Every structure is written in C-alpha cells, then in structure tokens.
Image (cartoon, rainbow, N blue to C red; front, side, top):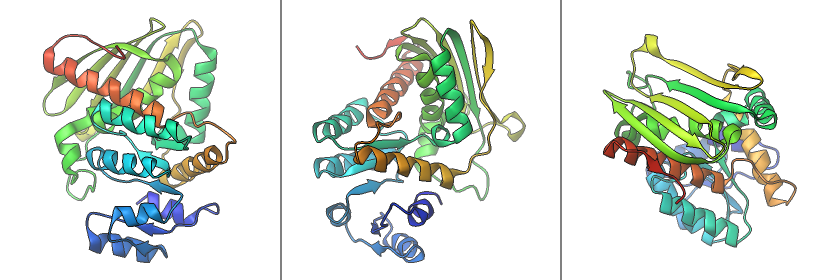
Length: 286
C-alpha cells in the first residue's frame, strides 16, 4: 500500500525487486511495479544497495540484521524489533559498517508535523506532554485489523512507537516508565524524561469508533503547543524517508529517526510492557 508505490515513483531509486513470505502476493506486487520477484530474501539482499522492509517486527529484525551485515542500507518499519537486544544488535551492525538507516515513523515525515516537532525541540522548557493515539482497526475490511501481530501486541507496539518517537524528539531520553493496561486494548504509559519532564501516552487499537482520536500536546514555560492535524499522505511521507536514506548514504545528512533512535524506542516500549506486567516502575537504559 505504501512502500512499493513510493519506491516505484521515486526518481532516485531503482526498484529492483520484491521478496515476501507469500510468493504469489510478492510476485503480483513486483509485477504491478515493474520489479522482479525473488524466491529468497538472501537473493534480494545480494542484488541491492538498500532494503525497505514492510513486515511484522519479529520478522523484520533478523532480516534487517542480515542485510546490515551484508553492507546494505536500511529503511525499516516501526518498531525495529520487539526485543531491545535485537534492535541494539541491528543498530550496532549499522554503526560498525557506517551504513545509512531510517525508521519510518510516518508522522515524522509529514512536513507540518516535522516542522512542529523541530520547533518544539528548539524551544525547550517543556514540563509535560500528552499523546493520545487511540483508534479502532478490528473492523470488517480493515487490512490492519487482519494482522496477527497487531492483534497480539496491541496499541503499545503498533501505534506506541509513533507516540513515543514524538515525545522523545521534544523531551529527550526516557529514564523510567510506568504503565497500566485495560481491556480490551488500552495502554497508559507514564514516562519520566532525563530533563525531569513527564509524558503520558494513551494507546489503543480497539476502542469504540466514537472514542477514536489522535492528539499530541506539549506544555511548558512558553505555554501549550498542539501538534497540527495534517492528514497523513503515507506514500508522500515514505518518499521523504527515502530522500533521507539517500542523503545519509551519500554522507550529506544524518537522519533524525535512524535505527539507533528506533532501538531507543524499542527499549522504552519493552520497559513499558514490563511495567504493565509487574505493576512497578521500570528504569530505561540501565
């Protein structure tokens, strides 16, 4: 829906091929965009300079590590992995080989949202943030609701990365988290940042449609700032992510949301999952 059309349309990309766990679907997608269908992921990795991954995190992580160890640049989906150790291993492989990497936190590549986050980070003085990413996807005909990993992991791991990426960009590293989970899928995360600021995240994929909402608010010495509600053009956003990967590979820039940043998000979400399971606050990053 997003990766293939964006890659096929990008002037700076030669869309070489597609590999997928379902060979028939992979062949159909490749044919629609003038690419080759590959029988193995290793065959695809061998023929390219970079890979873009649109797979569940537990499938993505080992593929990303293999590609990085083969010297390929990475454009990954979020979360990078479900285990902090896996995400850190991928980040280390990228750093050791001086590779480019970008993690596709969609809203980070929407111009109005990026401008807002950059301005908020530069302003500083924030004492709190609240992000509500609350939606319903388990409805007939919704392709995301048919995803087994989303059903199992819920809002914390699917839309939680987007929310956490926002507060990290503005408030800085998280040092401690607490969390509580309600039925059927409502996770509340309370995060203490190194600056002393507190962020609160409400996350769900399964609320009544009338309760769905997306909002991010920061409050501090300069007042209250609300994230703009720019409609998400995911294909255009992915194109911007590709721009950053190309720029990073050429040594022209360092992406804000690279795999190191993605690994940081993974560590925080894993700590939140532990906090919800144990009922105690959990430190992040040692």
